[in-house]
Image 1 (cartoon, one colour):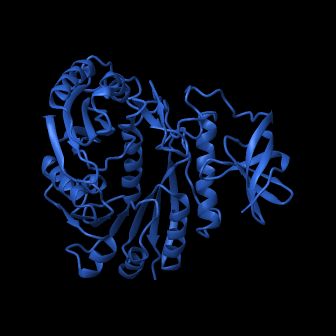
Image 2: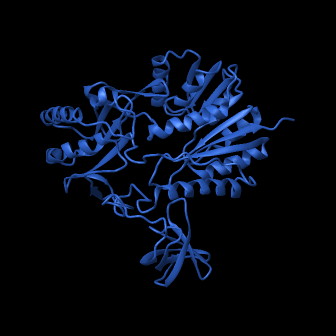
Image 3: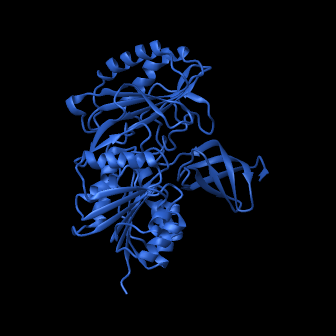
Length: 448
């Protein structure tokens, strides 16, 4: 790319899926950080190719009607939030529109039916997992600066559950005892039970200091009030139930205090959450997402169901309450251990789990003949062989849950060419104040 210091005045017309404002100047599409639709600003073009380029804001000449004052004092420095300066309802409308545009343009679906986005009434303190970064030289604790690995010292994050801020506050005076040994601290919070897990990631921890630290964490976490935007924890308070240690690069978890897992509930079922397990970050919105997925499945009760990329088995376990048989497949062996434990915990005997690659296991032969398939792949979307297997085996319904509208739309197009009809989609705002959006899609087999 050529370097340039061209200055232009542009009106921002759109926002990319990375959260950059998009404007045009001299035939170029310009991507500009911290720019919103409706902004008029003077920018300096920093890099450009033939049809697009990147620019930096010099002066905001006319603000968008949706521009607001950022709530967080770390906005623009910490890399956690993209849309701190964007009205929440405007964010939600943008994400909904982006899902429509991707399904239409990449998916090739003319005028797709996309239901209104399921947004949050109170989009604060929604994260049940926080990863605190440690700078051993500066003895600071917080989150990575935007586009760097520098640690921004943060006292309060508006996205995290209250135990995360408290753990950071309690830990600060102890950092001098750890030197370079402590790299990260993961805090997991069960929103509906109040159970808290703290995982220290680093080399050897000084035992006497750890004992003192754990006692203080236990006492202070128990005094935290429940946040107003979540179901209150049992007894109206949080409790430290698990403290673990993990050495970087190793899968081994050492339990320092309490249990090796914490317990949460969702939609009437119980789930054990371990240090390594994947559990949806926003439990309040996850319930909306899964309820919509079950609505799309519309089970009669006789179905056999396949849950691909099943993680710890949440979707499959909800489906198992309504159908004849469920099989979940997941490549991560730790997740399969969690899934089996969750099946036992909930007394579900009509569900089983298989550790392996989704694209390989189906072709080996499965103990189910699925009429309904759930897909919840990573951001890259489904492996091409998974899509090929769906087209070959022709289940009646596919419920596709995606965290990336572009790869979702790509797979919709292939499935549509392979005999499936796009019925509708519902976006879910799982990550307010960021550029990410989750979507659940229903596709049905075309008869004949």
